[in-house]
Image (cartoon, rainbow, N blue to C red; front, side, top):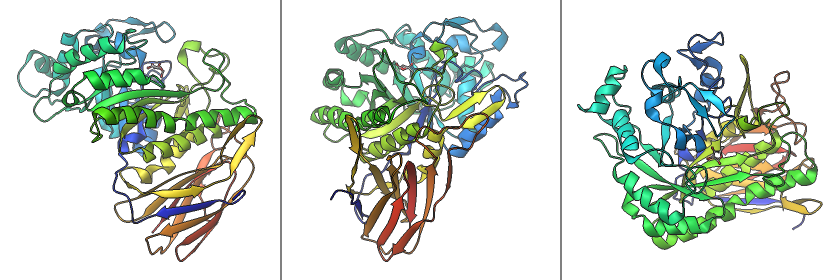
Length: 495
Ligand code: AHR
């Protein structure tokens, strides 16, 4: 079927919900993510509300992000939460040894984070310190945040101006404990997890969803040892980290300059997350056949060289249409594995790695990745609908990959949502879509596209890549025909 692309969507099938938390984000104390990105402080000349940047806050509200992970990353395992509460002028300063060796003044702490989450309407996901913290420290942090009664920590919270507990749910027990979080063996971490999780208490009205620190990409042994050694009733989620790197970790590619072969290499590597999830999930199935424990893909995205002239420890990179395709391919795959993948968090929100927002002083741009998350909103909490896709391939040099990447779901009002990425840089692809099991009455579509796969939004040209409406399709009874534009991501909604 070379050159013929066909999609069958079985709209009357499917029973698995795509957890909206798959569309989650991650903001670490790293580079200009928190400081300068989310938080500028109440005395800044940059327009803010109580210290939070207004433009970034609005962009996150508009995107309806379901959750936000904080404070790290590697930073989480050297963060001591008591340094970040009380009068900001009295808070001790520390060195952010992982990220650029800069001074962390702790002006953005527990209250600032949890109140930010509240303002933008998102669920906080906090990662506690296992690497350099203690069981007591983590246990008290939870008491401080979630306990409503009379206790030393709840009273301290009230003295710091917060009467009501925040009642948060998502709690991570350490981060990358195999690496920056303490270089532990999986056997050692599994025991540590059991100890920390025991004292991570549920308080009335706030039952924690506890997430164990999971594997680095292909380390299947880590998953196996944790599943074997941690009782299922002690763990709700198991994390997994997967970054897309062009070239090697030592010699990564650039964010905006790449050959067509490097372009395909990046997307092929992103698409491997399908196999990765399958492998980890298969191991988990042996211990948890009912898929009670969720894979929490709480760090994913592209990792390129930093932009020239920027602090190498700040991980600041631009974001092109290639990143938009990485996001589209990854989110389609996470949807596909929704039975096991209960949450995912893109790394990272503002000015770091595959950011959805970039800022420069008081200016802000939305990246192509932001627009894909915006486009994919209908998939959140929708029912995953099975499909069958026949697609031609794209090939450059040694690299090749399927040209079309699809996900399909059904919203509670019966609307069928089909996301399609055509990663071909310069070939429109005719596609016939067969909508089985519904009486299609009409369709609407939106598109994210740009002149080239290396197109990006800059502070002088902010809308090179954006979302717009797309009308170039024909719906006749239950068949939809269109030519999927080269280098585009589409969301088609059929009623
Ligand atoms: O996202 C950047 C870093 O990548 C995180 O701090 C760490 O968990 C991972 O290695």
